[in-house]
Image (cartoon, rainbow, N blue to C red; front, side, top):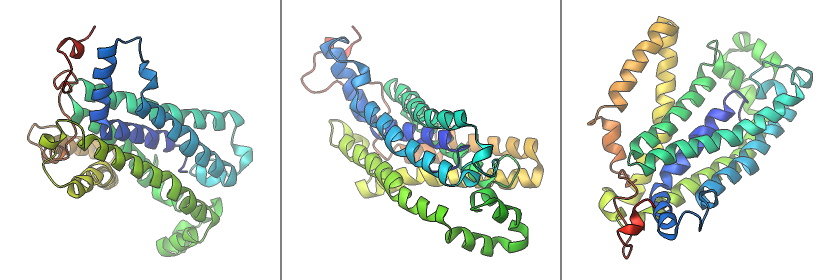
Length: 299
């Protein structure tokens, strides 16, 4: 339901966010599989992995394909003007890239969660959403937001003459915007319900009470700000720096600033992450009550 250039990036961010939100459950699943023997249950049967793939296949991909057919100019950020400019194989690639992107994001974040580096799993979500917002705000030529807020080729061409306010009003009254509202209620609504639901589910598991440092409502707000607001602010800041200093100097300065905010052991973002109650220990470090020591070890 977003332009095809940004759809795989959004899918990667969603997959990573799903894995971090279900981090405690993923650790429990890994312990239970090891306890029963790896051949008893396939890891592909993990319900959180399966639901992530189903979400991408049944919601993200179909809505994106609808918009690609309904308005190919907007869906390609005006690289193509109409259906004649879209190769049929590209539609197939777009559909597959959304599902694969969500799967890769989930598996990457899951790997970090299981080895006790949950914060780096969270950074996978930050990276996916930062690239998503950068594509929509700046794009490859600085006109990303104009491309997204133009319903058709003529609106995009007339952006400078019409002005920001008139162009935004024209987009808000277009059929494309109406389709985004309808699909967004299903796609984004389901996404938020899954993420919040899996967080709450994880907080009920053993060990969560010690990790959750704030009330649940506050923890959800912190998690939402960390996954959505922080990458959006970063993409906006990066766009401003690139416009002022050029690509190399702007991105270099932004990389230094982002590293200072995200990477130090006592960074503010890492401190906020520690309040949410997402596990940041190895999956073998906290066996469930009643499990034997042997069940918590590989093999």
